[in-house]
Length: 130
Image (cartoon, rainbow, N blue to C red; front, side):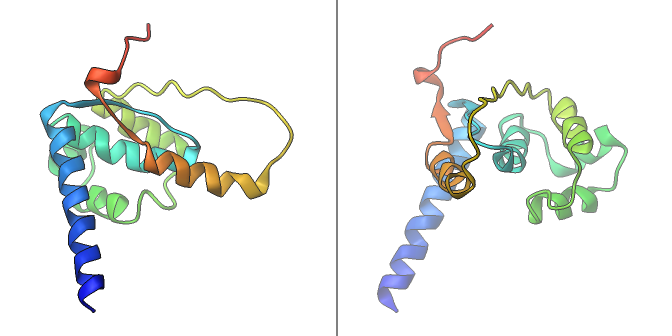
């Protein structure tokens, strides 16, 4: 039980560090490895932009509770067009590339998990892409 508590405490520390990096402007870009990464990126864009859930709701003409539900469920069931509206309201620019090749269904989950491990890129390691 002690190990489980230590593990949970470490996870909370990691999440707090990620939040602080977003709020401080240290993280400016998030690399997406699949479309399943988009919901988390939208939440991070809101945090990095110092936009509250209420402010985002106001920009979209929605109730704050709607934004809370979307974020709590990682935008489950929210369509691509609506997610684009959220990105636009946050001033987030999505520039993901798509590569064509043979289907790799078994690797999709692995790529998604790998992307989660390297999703926040500190600003000092970024280069401008225009």
